[in-house]
Length: 161
Length: 240
Image (cartoon, rainbow over all chains, first blue to last red; front, side, top):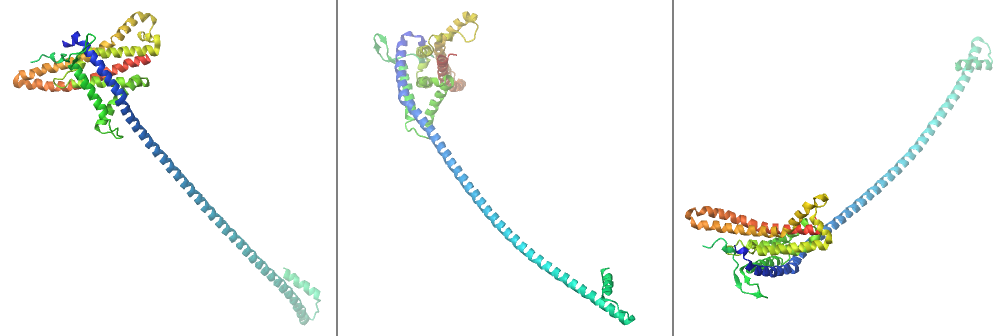
């Protein structure tokens, strides 16, 4: 077997070391750094792009948050305005109603008073007339002159019942 | 018809001698040069543009780089990073040597025990030196498994020593045997194709299958050689 021919060992091993050594230098100095650099640059590029995307997303989120805050603020302001206006309207309404109620109740009480006065006046007139009529009638019918005091007493006794 | 062993013959192309030692440039050296040139071309020309989005060739070169880098990372960890150029060179050199051997009438320098053993010995010595440099005399603990009862040392230590020193042999012989046997098989079965006339289609079909298998073995054995180196390196750096 040629593999066991010791005479060829030195030349094989010599050239193995020379060629392997040269290849090692070529790989470690030239080829591999280049590949490593390309891979690193690609990795960095991907990371940069991811970072950029993340930054843009953050920016977008911030803008959305800002917009929503502004929207909420505007909504709150609008609601406050509405509340104020409706409260003002309600207060005015209440005041008007109160004034009207006061006026009406005064008119009612005035009218009631006038009616009561008229009634009292009328009742007094009626009693006087009745006692007069009663005295006149007794005088004419039976010729008895009844004193005014007695007649008044009798009338008021009947009216008071 | 050439014998099945003729393909392994070392033929000097240019006689050379340094200090009385024969260092002739042979067919073996020629194919080593070819492998080295192809590896270099593959790794540099395909990366020439260094594109952000790789093309086919650049993608292939990057796959090789990342394959070896991951092998080293998984087996040795981050401490192995500085040995990456060596591991990568080793893997590419052995794999291209194996694959070039699949070209008819070529020469497979990895089918020679001298080449494989020289590589294995460099790895063995290198790994041992790294081990002693990192751990000092504590590296001798390699020969006694952690946690074993002290009484078992008399059996375990010789076993561990033998297993440690058999590493370069197993590394070299595995690759040599795989390459040699595969090529002999191809040659022998190939010889039948012409000899038995029309029935030759049967060995031809078999030959086709074995050729595919041999391509697989060429890549696989380079992988095995490299991963074992990684495991030895792991032992030297982390100890068991």
